[in-house]
Image (cartoon, rainbow, N blue to C red; front, side, top):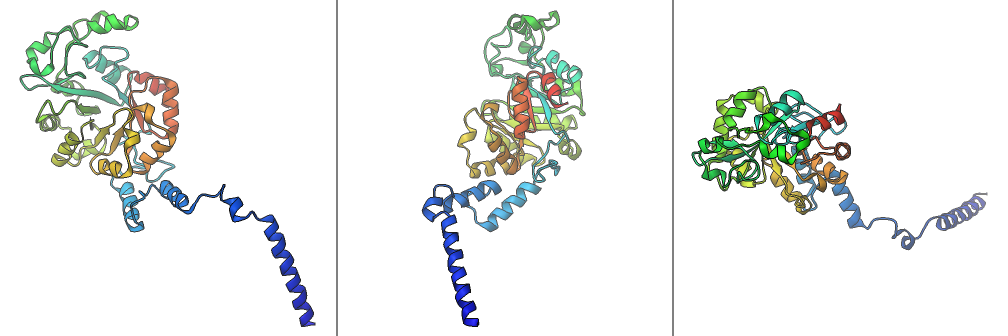
Length: 346
């Protein structure tokens, strides 16, 4: 009886194994569909955003840092470790050089429109410095493009700069938006801007050409302090963000005040060259990354967010691009048309 059972069981087992072997692909057959062991490990690293040269202990430490060392401590609704805008907004609107699509850039006309009329989250200010040491709002090192003058900003005194017409060029270039009041607009100083909009406004300030202006960072921080914008409450809530393409400029500011939120700007095409080691080094002093918007994909945006960055791409002027980038997971955009982005995110 028991022997018969054994024979039956043995026979059934043999049949079962035979059927299993017929129904299961061979190793050779599956090799074209399953990742090799090293590819699988790479996939896991990508999903968890662990650099390949890190051991598991280091990886855990790195992940905890990305989740906990943000200035804000606020998180995204669906991604608990994603750092959120310090203003508390899901998407923040950064008025690139003011409402520069509608008014002459870096003038009170452009800043007034973006801040008072369009309701942008941030006034964006590019800084240059005059011959006699005043920080002024201007994108280029030379005044040629946006004024009726010629030469470098650092070769002109503030008095000489104030004599220039910084608005008429806009009327000629953009007749559809031209206004008489733009004629003879003036280049404002940083102090004038901070006085005009006060300590409750939000400022996104770039140190332009810091190599040309030694000591610019100390001067900027002194001005912000004078206007009561460096206290913990102001910094924690994002009233000031400082950005630069220069690592050294940002590091210099970080050494002087580690609580100031910093954003590393990235040249077009440069983001693809950054490995995790480089990104982690940037994240050690900067809370944000500002890439050219055309360099972003959903995949690399998620990766930057997983590494703990706030992501603010520049310069986004079309609604279709704004919608696409929002779906990628960016935290806001630099735009010349703040009203367009406000419509997209409402």
